[in-house]
Amino acid sequence: MSVALTDLVATSTAVGRERGRLKKRATLASFLRPLPPQELVLAVSYLSGALPQGKLGVGPALIREISEVEGAPHASLSLVQVNDRLDDFHRIAGGGSATRRRSELGGLFALATLEEQRFLSRLLLGEIRQGALEGVMVEAIALAYDLPTEAVHRAIMISGNLSAVAEAAATQGVSGLAAFALTIFTPLRPMLASPANDVAGTLEALGSALLEYKMDGARVQVHRDGERVRVYTRALNDVTESLPDIVRQVRSLPLRRVILDGECLALRADGRPQPFQVTMRRFGRRRDAAALQDTHPLSAFYFDCLYLDDAALIDEPMSVRAEALSALVSTAGMTPRLVTDDPADASRFFAAACGAGHEGLMAKRLDSRYLAGSRGADWLKLKSAHALDLVVLAAEWGSGRRLGWLSNLHLGARDPAGEGFVMLGKTFKGMTDRLLAWQTDALLTRRVSEVDGVVYVRPELVVEIVFNDIQASSQYGGGFALRFARVKRYREDKSAAEADTLDTVRALFQAAHNAPVDAA
Ligand code: AMP
Image (cartoon, rainbow, N blue to C red; front, top):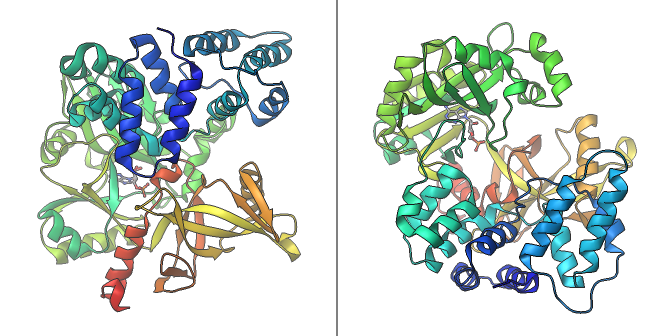
């Protein structure tokens, strides 16, 4: 059976148009169900915006050039043909490769209809967003092969590979899914936290909880087997080469086989954290990162142990994992921690974390499993400043000193009811010249339209905004407006699907004003 690209494009379009999750899931499931394994792997991959070849280095300029190739009048391409062509494209290297890349990709585009060309362009540019689609895809795979969603979800958390999981589900069912096991040197997605409002409410929700400093650096997942060590980021990129200091430190621990989860950051001479941006420079271009090793050494603070000796610990309760961690790592190598159910103790600990220059606290349910990749209610984050991760919807051209730069940002929270964003306010505060230049570039590449000096963009960039207060307001659709909002930093590690929602804004408002929304 050869599966046509045009059918996949039609499915993708239908899923994009449908509003309800159930419909999306059903559409995907009925498309996937009859596919043979090889096509299934390709279909899941393309539908979720990924390429089996990985990144192909195709930028907007190349797409613009080959989009001029006239489209085919009739659809004829199969998924396997597309994949073969992209394999050939991937193999091109050496002298004259730019011209050969252009002609190879041009050849593929000449065989595609206009609609297929559009889909392929978005796929190659990485514009088919994975975050929002993944949850639906998990449910669709479960539905297609009549398997428990939980089992599909678990296999994906562990492997991070939708296509491989879909293939196992289709060909081997539950036993295939169960075979996905945590292994050293295959990173798993980090567990995430939901925002919480205050210390007392957090303890009420969790009972006696493990509280830890929330440090503002970069997440690291460290895998070690004997002398071999690899370090992965939150997005599962291998950054071992940039972090020799972390590697050395892990090698010096009396461990054999282990996976540790933690945060690493650059500290000042007095032990207080450097700003986030300083830590992130160590993750930049390899040459710069090497030069920064001596001036900005990183310290790792671990907070979880996911694998030890020959056993995965992710299904053990947090309390057991925390104990395992303290047996392995000295207190200096862990995030400072406290187990308590007493709000007064917890408040003092929160004040100590903020006083030491950290972001706030993490509160973790003692009997919780490690739910890789999920942002649930077992881990809660308490930040000292009011902060939200919002999506940039548009930006206004600056004037005066900011002429030529996109400056005033229009900020939106995710609307949990639909797929859109709800505007919460604007800000031009907190921007350095460097940030203005970066943001102007980043926004212009996402430009959709421009009206009266306002550039509307694809809602993709996530920015962390601090503010003094949330007000009830009829100015914007969501009923809230931020007061004294300013940019803290761009969250390049987050996609728009991970931005804060209007529900979070509502909860923050209620906590701050001690009132239900409709009484405001
Ligand atoms: P956020 O990025 O604001 O959603 O917060 C989650 C991030 O906080 C995690 O991905 C970690 O990088 C970081 N973090 C800092 N300290 C801790 C901690 N003690 N436990 C878990 N995550 C932490």
